[in-house]
Every structure is written in C-alpha cells, then in structure tokens.
Amino acid sequence: MSEEQNDQYLIYSDVFSAIQDKTKSGEFFKNSIQFFIISNEKRADINLVDDDDGDPDLCRPERIDLTLVHRNETNVSECGYQLWNGALLLCDYILTNSCRFSNKTIFELGAGIGLCSLIASRLASKVICTDHDNDLLDVVRQNIELNDAVCRKECIEIQEFDWKQFNLNEIDDRIEIVFAADVIYDDDITDALFNVLRKCFQEKFKLHSIYITVEKRINFYLDTLSVRCPAYEYFLEKLHDFQQDFPVLTFEKMNTDFNSIKQCTKIYERTNELVQKRRFCYFI
Image 1: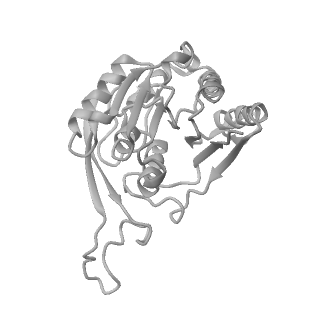
Image 2: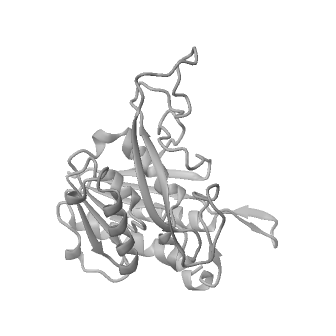
Image 3: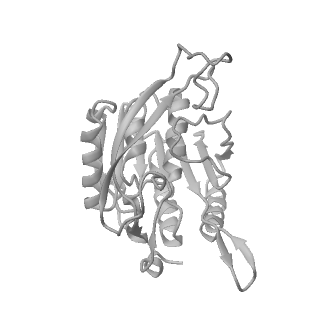
C-alpha cells in the first residue's frame, strides 16, 4: 500500500499521549523527555533507584534532560514530525552500548525530529542526520539548539536526502554505521530504503553495521478475521532478498528485553511489537 493512499487519514504516536490531549494536525508542541544512563552493573528498571531498604541509592544513573519540538498528529506523509517508539528503543540501545558508537561516523536515514542523532552525537565523531523534508530538518535544527547542553552539535551535520532520488556521492565515504528508526510503514518507502542500503554496501567500504528499529503496525482484517502486520511482513521479504544479494552479511534480530537493552526512559512502553535488527558486513 502506498503512502499516498493512506494520506487522507490522521495518525498519531502514543509517546506523549499521557501528557496532553491529541490536537489538530499541524500544531507544534514542546515536551520534555528524560533519559537515565545506566551502567551494565545496575538494574534495568529505572524505577528502582532505591536500595533494598528503601534508602536512596547514592550511585544514581546520569540523567539527560531534553526538550523536543514535535507534532502530536499528522497525516502519513508527515509522520516524521512525531516521535515514535522505535526511535526511543534505538536511543536506549545507543546509551547502554556506548562503546559500539564511540568515535564512529553515523548516517541516520529518516531522522524525523532528530532524537537518535542527538543522542548519538554524545558519543560519535560525526552524525549525518538526514531526511527528505527541508521543513522537518528545520525542526531538527530547533531541537539541536534547544538541547545544545546535552548534545555535541558541532558533530551533527544536517543533510537533505531523498531515498527515491539520490546520487551516491551524497553519502559520505567515511560512514561506518547506519541508523533507521521506525521507517517501516509503507511498501514503496521500504523498497527505497533497501535500494539505499544496497548502494551503501556496494560502494561505502567502511560501513559495517546497520541498526533498524521497527514498531510492527498490527491490522485486523474483517474478510479473513485475521490479525496481520503487512508493512512488517513486506519488510521481512525485502530483508530476505537483501540477504540473498549479500551472502557475506550476517543478520541478527536483537533481543529487546530489559536485560539486553536497558530502558533508559520511562516515556514509552517496551512491547512485543518493538523489534530491533542489526547487520554486520564482513569484507574479505
């Protein structure tokens, strides 16, 4: 199903639903969000900040306070203006696996409001934050300025990048890691995403890892009385094709439980519908 077919409908993320009511499409909000960096020795549940006797734990995790410009409700083609759970899952992974991203060059596809790039900039040597919508990239710029105390804005490069129409020279030769958070919702866009990834692996020889987070969108079909996730199913088909084209790659569906990826923010619920995949490329 194409994005254009769905664009008549309004959609909303549930990330900020507990904070304020849904509002009409196009209205911008600023909301705060907190992350707690928890070491591997600490318990995963950020609610457990007291010791067993109920006394305060003096070794508290580091707290990151951010303010994000976003929308609560949009049509499908403008869904990047909202914050989605897949981006929060990826941020959790970045913060609890910091060694994987330290001093790396990261290329984020479909960055939306830019949260993952903001978090990654605390670790990486360079983050190239991209989206196809120039107006949305202006929102990213606002979020960088609002959060300059907790991100390294000198490390963030903002770039307009259209997956469907791009020149390979637009992609930095030095990229080592690709992010794509919650961009799986439309088959045409999924086709374009894998086209970008193919070009990257064919030409960008420093690239070794891709991290994709997906929130499966479940639909109920009256004709068959069945529950399906068509966008995710199509993604898996394209992933299989991609693996056939690049047999030297290893593909991994990552465990998203609290022991594997600690939950650093309480603003979303870690559900079974959230999936993270990582790929490595070995060059011989």
